[in-house]
Image 1 (cartoon, one colour):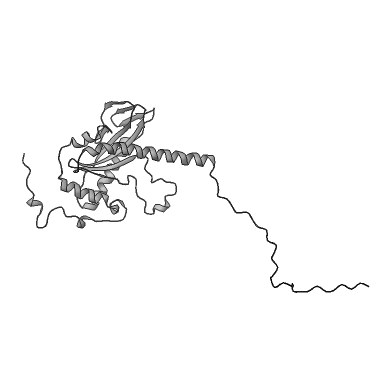
Image 2 (cartoon, one colour):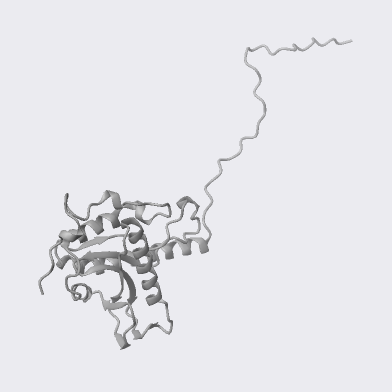
Length: 245
């Protein structure tokens, strides 16, 4: 009879045996689908086109001088929690800015029409067979800017809507809209100064400071009238000199 020696219960080496674990490969990043990639590329191109159109309109305001101030403001509603804007609804589809100077306050909305022909008849704009609501959008932006600035200052601040077109296509006008100014980006500077002098340069400077304050455009209650002095120390509105006619 053959006798086999008994196996040791504890391994001879001091190291514990390594369990047989299957090594899973490292997970790679999820690649976007062709449709998602196309949407992302289109959004990037649209953002670049909007930025380029806004820059072309801004270059015309360099000739107005130091009395004019250009303020980049959020044309869309600022959400209470910006990180919840997942689908990007609060992004601007068109460029826009505030122009503040001796002629008053203007909410400029920039529309890029490229080489397409633009036909304007009153409040109707037709481009490539479509009728976008550009004038209604410009009026809505001006109304929102006036409401925010009036709440921040503590008095009524009128803002005039302006729609300017950027592009090389022909523009045919069969009737001007009401309560909204319209011009090409090449005529924007002349359009703004055509209103004459309505406010002083000091008032324009103070209004630009209010417009640049981020809290002016938030939904939270904000009263900044105490931070700005509209008259020098010891002076009131009655001490203002009357303008000669």
